[in-house]
Length: 230
Image 1 (cartoon, one colour):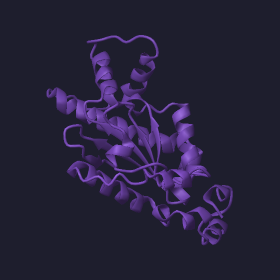
Image 2 (cartoon, rainbow, N blue to C red):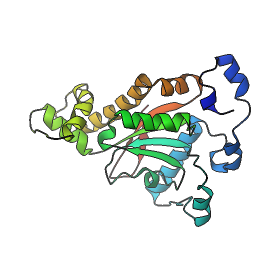
Image 3 (spheres, rainbow, N blue to C red):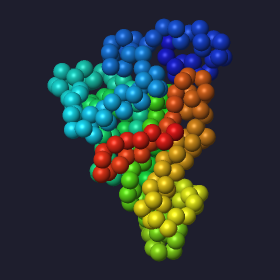
Image 4 (spheres, helix red, strand yellow):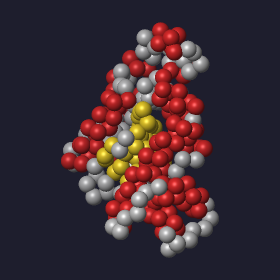
């Protein structure tokens, strides 16, 4: 019995029905029995390989790609920035079918992003959602400039700025511009992670009753390292 069938049941009934693992878990060894923390460890191990330059580039073979034709079973969902320097599959040294990746400048959480995360949690049954910010984020930097009256934005870019503005305003001022930007980046990732749970009944139910975790993390451009924030 899969998690998505359990959302409408009582806690006692759900506990009784979750004993049997879904069929796909038995067919996909890399995803079998991974809970949220095990999924994070897998991501951390992959990032360690990436940082050291010893990537294994898993799940890129023709045979593996063919095995995914009938379905996908990612072990984590990553909501990251659209910045070309931060591709999650490379940062975590993962391959086809491993990560359900959603990208938007500044990790801005609009309805389409939230719906995509809900799909990953409810239908693909990922145990972990990671909101991945990164150093020197252009979207966050632009928002800081607007908040401080140093710049103006037009078109739909203003939508991004308005979405990131609360994180900037909630960050204590700092004379060190780089340090302030770094803290704003971290706060944006943490804010988006919290908003997911707050705004979505599906995600909140998964977190409270099915062991799903939503965490924030930050990527350093110079070292390639990812740090978990929550």
